[in-house]
Structure formats: structure tokens, C-alpha cells
Image (cartoon, rainbow, N blue to C red; front, top):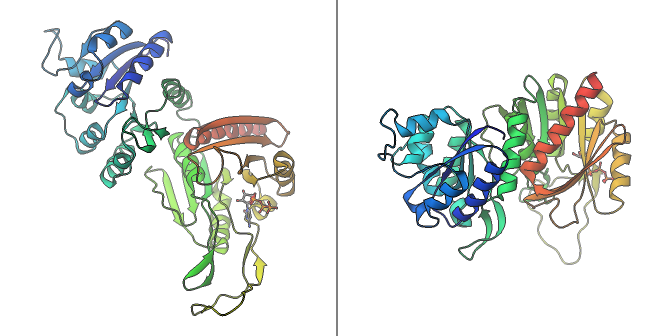
Length: 401
Ligand code: CTP
């Protein structure tokens, strides 16, 4: 951050107090920080606080032109190396997505060519509102970077996703992104995500608790690092917004097998984070099974082990598997690394709090072929994804050398 010109936009949410710590930390790290506030932000924190922390004048009004030689919002837009909006309300996200420029922050952001990082903070229901989701998707398509909010107790009393990410993490994410901007440029990355569904009859299936979040985070992170990504996903409630991601929807393990094998030869990195069913019903009923007295039995047959098959066909690809374990975690994980001929494996203890299925966060150990182990402590899956891709990139480089 040394000598970087950072423009921080603070909008009107209670999390504005955290932007003070962010300003101070950026300043301590050697950045030149200037702050713009919306009117509503000034109701939470005084501009004087930011002025003292940034040691620069604070901008609140588009028409308060401090220097007749310059037009302030254009000057700031050109001055910035990086723009951070933290906290970003649903309102500013909506304005930017629709091109409205009616205050100092929105006019400046629309006029800049600098990379823009948005750290939203709002009530969980607002964050999940379709229009907010749509606006974030639009901005992602425009190339804006989102630093997801964390989950927990919110100032409004609700518990859920919407809490502004901690200032240290915001800085870490931006630094990591800046230094790894084009890490995977020119690489093709194939990722599998989500569960598979194995049909029993027209209304029932066997499946598992995977939400696809880890695989989707990997796809987003790989695309942000400049890769061309193919994402083969089982049925999930997630959206992909990055223009460099080609999405292939599948339902069963067999369909995932077909898609992965078809895409495998032309990819450089292949990551199998999907939770594939190991068994499927031997017989699929055409009509709905009617209940009867007593119990019911299904004979199950094995599905193909996609990862093992890819391992046996591997040529130039760097192949990464996932291992979801609940006991002897490292031992079982390493055993899979060898048995399936992988270059690396990402092992997680799915019974640990903060890890695995249906969690926003994950805790993983990355192990490569040389038995080098790297722990990634609890972090949002988006951050875990970025760190994993950095490890994969480094190991690939070593193998190529
Ligand atoms: N996998 C796969 N095809 C399967 C089963 C698993 O490609 N039919 C892949 C997963 O995508 C993951 C890795 O294998 O990358 C490990 O999955 P996991 O469920 O942990 O292990 P299994 O191989 O199924 O072994 P076990 O049931 O003994 O734990």
C-alpha cells in the first residue's frame, strides 16, 4: 500500500465507524488516503474524524469546489489508484448499477478508471433482496470487485449476512488481488461444484448437503485472476456473473462424469470440489412409489469415480481433488491424493464448526504431491478460494520448472 492513492467512499450505514479503522490502517501502511462521504454517512461519523485520520480534507459535496484550478470529482477520480467503498449501502450499489450520479461518491466512481472494491454492509434481508443481488451482479459484470460481508449479529438486531468485513480483511483482500491480478492469465481452469442428484422416482432423489459455494468461489476467484473458467455444477441456488465463466449445468454423477471428461483435455488446472454421489439407485421407478406398510429397501450401485478417472487420464493438467472427512482427516485425505493420482488435495473436516457444507466459511489443509501441507484458517470461502489458487499456481510453476 506504500504511496498508493486510495480513495475511500463512506456511505450511510452504522458500519461507517469501521471505515475509521480502515482509514487509519491504510494510512499506517503508507497509503495516501482521501475520503469522500455521503450526507447520510456524516450523520454516523463526523468528517473531522476522517480528516484527522487521513490527514487530508474530506469531500462531501460535489459543488464544494476547493480549488478553482480543478473540478474536484474528476480530479479525485484521476488521482485514485484504487477506490474502496466501505461500507457500501444498497443505495450506492443501486445507483452505480444504474448509472445515477447525484452525489460526490457516485459522480467520482463513474468518472474513474481505477479498480473499485465494494464492501457492502446492510440488513440481511436487504442483502438478499433480488434487486440488490441483481445490482451486484451488474457491477460484477462491469468489473467491480466485491468484498463479501460476513455473517453474524447485525446492528439492526437480525442475525445473518450483512456485517461489513473487518478492515484488516478488506486490506488483505485488496492487497492479494492487486499483487495477483493476472496470476492465471492465459490458463484454462475446469471446476466442478455442488452436489449431484440420483433419481429414485419422478419426485424423489438421493443427494447431499453441498451448496456449491466453495466451487463457485473458486470459479469467481480464478476468473478474477484472469483464467478462462468452465464450471460444471450440480443443482445449486447460486448464480455466476463473471464473463470469463462458462457454466455447464448437470444433475447426476453420470452427467457430471460426461461433462468433466469432455472438458478435461483442453484445461490446464482441474479442481474437483463437487460432492459427487458414490451410489445411485439401481432401479429408477417411472411412477411415484406409493407407501406401503413396513420398511422399504433400495439396492444401490456405484457411480463412477470421476476424479480417479481424470487422474488416470492426466497429461499436462494440474489436478486438484477435495476430501470431505469427519475422522482421520489428514490421513484419509493424503490417501486419496495418491490413490487418485492428484497433484494436490484440499482436505476439510466437515464436522468442524466454520467448515464444510452449508457454511459461508471454510477451514482447509492443502497438501501437494511433495507432502507439503498448508493450513488455511477459518475464512470466507471467497478468501479460501483465492489462497488455494495462489498455492496451486505456485505448485504448478514449480512443476513446470
Ligand atoms: N469424487 C468424484 N467422483 C465420485 C466421488 C468423489 O470425482 N464418484 C471426487 C470429489 O469431487 C472429491 C474427491 O473425489 O474431489 C473426494 O471425494 P470424497 O467424497 O471425499 O471421497 P470419495 O472418493 O468418495 O471416498 P470416500 O467415500 O472413501 O470418502
